[in-house]
Image 1 (cartoon, rainbow, N blue to C red):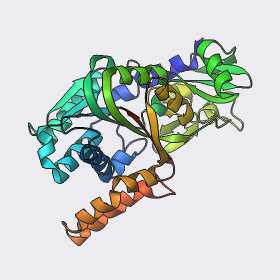
Image 2: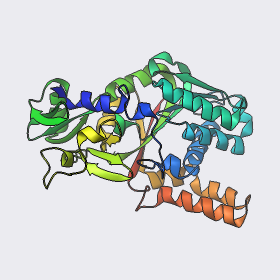
Image 3: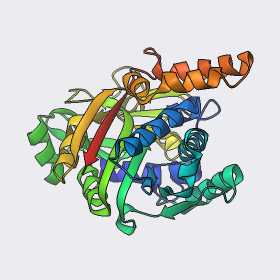
Image 4: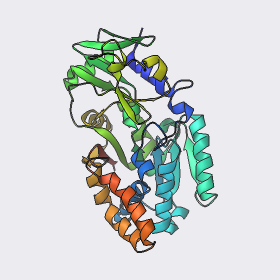
Amino acid sequence: MIPFGEYMGEWLYGEGGYYASMPIIGKKGDFATSVTTSMFFGGTIAKRLLSLIESGFLSKRACVVEIGAHHGYLSADIAQFVYTLKPELLKTLTFVIIEPLEILQKAQEKYLYEAFGDAVKFSWFKSLKEFFCDEAFVVSNELFDAFACEVVKGGKMLYMEGHEALFGEIKGKTKELCDKYGVTTGEIATGYEEFALNLSRSIKKCEFITFDYGQKGVRSDISLRVYQGHKTYPFFSLTKYAKNEKLKDLSLHSLYKKSDLTYDVNFSYLKDAFEAVGFKETAFCAQSKALVEFGLTELLEILKNSVGENKYRMELGKALQLIDPSFLGERFSMIRFQKA
């Protein structure tokens, strides 16, 4: 019997794990992201980067770092829009991807070389512990919902015996965090403090931006769920604890390492982890508000004046999904930290 966090870690990152098997993301995969929805997600992030350089917070020799890059699409879109808006910066900026999984790093290298050849230089590091720089703009998308978590309910903690879910005594760090945040039912993420500490040690001055689903504070329910083929299955609907009849055609055994496993992020906990090591929260808002403030409207206006009507309408439709309240705009939030 092992704590659920170990089981989740193996599901996603262990040998033959879900992310290690290069899942397809997008319409043909198990789920879509803002990155796969529109290139203007990366475009608006690039515009934020340029504003930091123009304001003097970062210099033109800063590193641009992505963590959790999967295929490398977001890094590619950021680089492409830097080229479009300020091409001279490609000679001075350094692009970096933090990627622990070798199979993903090779896929990223292949994709980015096919996109840019030798025109844009990318560097890879397996962890933040290997990377050091004076200043950086760091971005991630849907990173923290894939950190292993523990699950608590009714004063007990979730354990797994094989693929059988069992509740037992709450122990160690999980108990400390439950007491600190008043969590009686829900997920307790593990690893946020270590991540923030490593980031703080790696970079002297930076802005860190991340997008994810979740909320500030405790949900008081369990959001843990499985994604497969754009369908969502509450985790406990696949166990003996199912409120209604257990799903007949699916089981944890059949979905293990073959589907995504995720939960809603508690941004209050994430904030505390970052502020404990010297960062300051500078913004927290819905994705729609963040992208508009970063300059999505201005980028769409540039597109309108440079391409034909059909191309513009096609890209506009994709971009609007990023800020649509019924789709990605309000479901996802952005939190931003700075360390000066």
